[in-house]
Length: 370
Image (cartoon, rainbow, N blue to C red):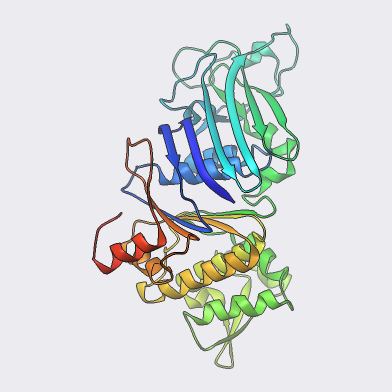
């Protein structure tokens, strides 16, 4: 588990640190303070040598360069200030129970070979064309990624275009892991939730196991009459475009499509399945309370904490909601160090860490910590 985190030069975070991290960590703060960027940094650091989280985050954010021949992620946005030159870099590091780990990403001079195919699948002459993005062309650069603290220290060098782009087709085809947000026991739930196909796959992997019963019990916190969940047939799954299709529930003896049950059920199902998938790893959830009524948030946090503890999962989540952190306070225990609240303030170099005792005291006194 990560005990602390240090970020330098990544996105909007010039210098940033978090300490006092526990089993379950809730990140709070105003809009645009950097909560999602911190989640993305943890995702990248925890990916054990895969760059997939960086590129997929850029796709979600729409940080793309399009042209007729190629679609590229605009890597300039990974750097604080959105400007790159030779030597520009960012660093993400942390101390974990297994030792120190770090990811350093740096722009370095590219070794030019006339008319040789570059890493984007084009020759260097093609690479220098204007692809519709205004501005001065960059000098020939490569992107060097260096991980330490993973099972094997790893370095990767990728050629970027003169507009600061990295071929999306190349990174997606070169590593199967980039086809999904999930990397084994490292799971990310965005504000949109898990994709339907991933939820179905996760559910089918736990059918007829004790984990299936645990997931059903989690959903009963929202709807006590739920008796069981089942995957519908492949044909029915393919015939619907419903974003919440593919699963059905037995509710008070009646078979009901899960899409009829409301957003809260779908969201909580995704969280419960993701916890099981992340066994021995890390779960990241952006806006964890999305779609959930305040009356079930205590049950949600109890599910998250108890499951994370039993399956050895470290959880990082964000919220804007006072109800959400006050619900978290209800599952804290003074003297324990497994839950932390981290207040992020825009422009501040370090998060304000709240212990379990301090979280409970803040909630009891009605203090504003968001």
